[in-house]
Length: 164
Length: 475
Image 1 (tube, rainbow over the protein chains, first blue to last red):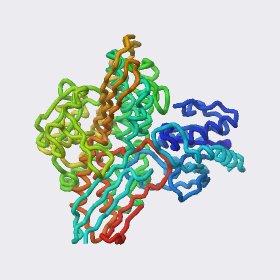
Image 2 (tube, rainbow over the protein chains, first blue to last red; image 1 turned 90 degrees about the vertical axis):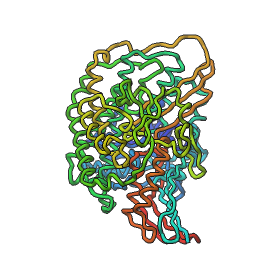
Image 3 (cartoon, rainbow over the protein chains, first blue to last red; image 1 turned 120 degrees about the vertical axis):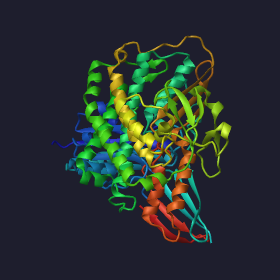
Image 4 (spheres, chains in turn red, brown; image 1 turned 135 degrees about the vertical axis):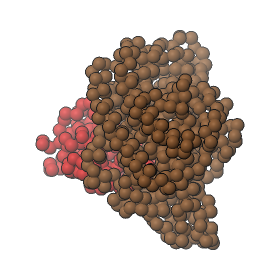
């Protein structure tokens, strides 16, 4: 398989900082000379590049078959709480955490499913920005807005690392 | 010395759901609360928007059942526009809805419910999960994924997008069904129906083998609510709302737009989520259950043959009376999944489904509008109620979501299980899991419209009256 990377942003653009990944993905696409996503576009219909990027409302199991075509995944999200840096960039391991109620999946759970069901083990990272405001609105906290470009830089750095 | 146990299962953002169990001096459960710290700002967020944008906006309320909101908003838009969608449009909307019901019910059963049933409430939580199913029965796991994919692909084929369908609009839908898509949907029906039947077999087998637990676990009398068709049959897209009491007596049947005459909402200081109840019975006597168990307890029949046969068996569980045990939600849920698949077949075989007559356009005059749209979301009855000014701009939005309708029922279920199983002198993981499992029966969607990565601890803390932490379980 050729070396391929997919960047998956996810969140809700109507919930303030929760939607920051949408802006990060679009800024990344702009800098890569790719068509920017319209609101409600996912990018799933135009996957043919060495570096693809999509935006989803959440991670769901049916994207597993899609991910089998990539050997690197970079997840982009907001995060909550002060335990990690405001801009976090960390590897993601395949690890299932029991989910009591929710239908959506975490990045590590998605990787665990990929590994267990499809014997597929892509390298994966999470780039996340700490969110402060999750109210119903479409504006970002100033601190979040300021971290969009650094997040894009972090993604570009990961993409430029030696191929797996 | 009184003590308190807190379960914080969903604290993604500032804590969305918690269970607190208050113990008496002997360590016995005194009182249990199910708290939901849900943001209720969406209604205000929508005010000032054109009503016809709501089918798109409201999909982002929830990433789990966006189609339910999409369709309820479209139905409210029909009423505001004073138009009736043509029959083919109704069929296509229902087809999309069935896709969502199938994928949601399948996901819940295999991912969240089945591990308890297959491995037991007391199994090691490290292995009491879907991965053990994958390891022990990989074929079943793949079938589960395919069932969800099948439902999701119906939504995608109709909506034109994998996420946030652009399909239903006030007056109908914006595109007819193509023959290519009709064939593709029909091609896998037989296989998917077999998967639903296998799930029913698992659920039914467990419930029969564990009958004492099934009939006592989170079992309590309540009223029940759900849509029915003109013949009293199961309806998930359209119909009238029927309510029955704990003995199965008919309490009310009304058109969705009259819901405020029958339903009121009670506020408790310990939860942001309101507690809907039947006006004429008052609160809490008027609380009711919705969702698969609620629906199957109010209907007279199911209009598809395989699901109807299962429904006959379901009705025998309590001698024709309503089934009270919360664990029967799992069985009811998969009977509905089977119905959804059979209904997809019926819809695809209907000659009208291929018609190009899929939209009625609204009249041009400008008048203030009001409209109610109701569908049976996978988790239960979903109300969208909008008012607009003469330009179609929303001036009032009221939503009662399925999880809200089940709010008091989940509170009651958690309390019943805590009383039955919790020994405050020493917590066990199995105890925690049982309390969770009681709530899990209702497949709640507490606040899934944000997805930021954060702490999602599952924690039970035993706290003495002086604040000392006596015991703690978490995962």
